[in-house]
Amino acid sequence: MDRIAENRDRAGMYFERVGTAQGEVYESSSGWVLRVRLRARSGEQYTFQQSVRAEGKLDAQSKLRDWIDTVALPELVQRAIAGGEVSTASTLAQWCRTDIDARAMKDNSRRTVTAALETYIEGTELGRLPVDHVTTKQVESHLRDLVTPRGPASNSTKKKILGIISRGIKQAQREGEVRGNVCDAVDGAYYLNRDMRADEPPAMTLPDFADLVEEAQASKDRRMEMMLRVVRGTGVRLGELVALRWGDIEEGTIHVERAARKNSDGVWVTEGIGGEEAAKSEAGARRIPIAPDLFHELMYYRIDQKQPPRSAYVFPGPDGGVEAPTTDGTRLKALGARVGHCERLQRCPETGRKISRYVPLGGRSHVPGWHQIRRLVASRLVESGQLSDPEIMAIMGWSSVEMLHRYYRETDASFARKAAAMAAI
Image 1 (cartoon, one colour):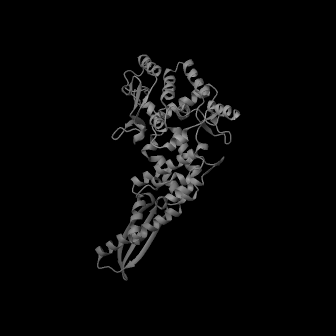
Image 2 (spheres, one colour):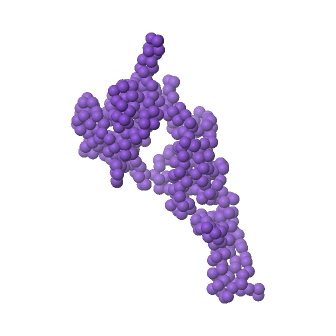
Image 3 (cartoon, helix red, strand yellow):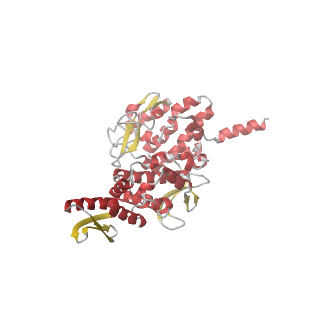
């Protein structure tokens, strides 16, 4: 692309964000004079003037338009770049304020994103770059070197920051400021910590799981109790669990055909395989054998279920539709807090700022989570020795054996058997 065309395209991308241009032509003794007044959004005004030869007023006006496109507006853009008005940080901040997904956020989620922008994007080399200058390698380098106030960023933090950058650039893409999303090509092998297992939660222990079930029973939270039992008995993901319908359950089998996701309006819906409704992946669509006791418990639960009436979902939300998985994730943490597995902090110990965060207790490395129960199921299946790797992968909904290696966590019983074997050598 030649320089004139590149300047014209770039000026067009940023035109609405950096300001406006007004031009006029008039004839003087030395020829035609082109004058352009630029008004930046910051309030500053600039005037450019040039004398040209033209064959009349129409020709001079044509030259004026070309001059605005190729000289005046690009100059305004450069001044805006220098002032940080079209930086990546400002683009992401604008997305957080105006994007439809951001407007659908709860207040605490919006505050979290805003704090992440201030902490990890603003003031950095990546944040100062114009958004159309950002490359995939620069995003990878930024994530690789990301540091939190407590030290190097964890893999989960890096993934969250990548998601924020990606969604902000998508907003810029919709507005025509960039032609593609550089985050789509970001390679996790480059920026993630090499020891991914160290950053992942361990499998939940059986005593901890029993504590949660007992507390759910004691508090008469029948919905939470059954959700725990279904995940323990099937290993399904939380998004698949809340999307489960009564028609997916038959004696001896649960059919996983859909998962929950958030649509462009910020509403949780279910999607199925290959069309309007699709599960997480092709391997995610599967049938899972269930024990007779679990099937009968589900049928009794269906009879006892009164609110909301006649919902197609096994674990619906208050309106009878699909429940947000994040809501059930928070409920599980609250359940864990009641049994002493974690506690909720309402103020940051370092800054005193109001927060809402759960921290593990009793020597645990993570707060209770649904995925830890899924890891427990995977680990128990491996240690049973009764199923092959492909059979376990089919139950868990994995397409790669690498996932099996990542999810497996040695249990205390397995370690005890190894210790006994070593002692007998």
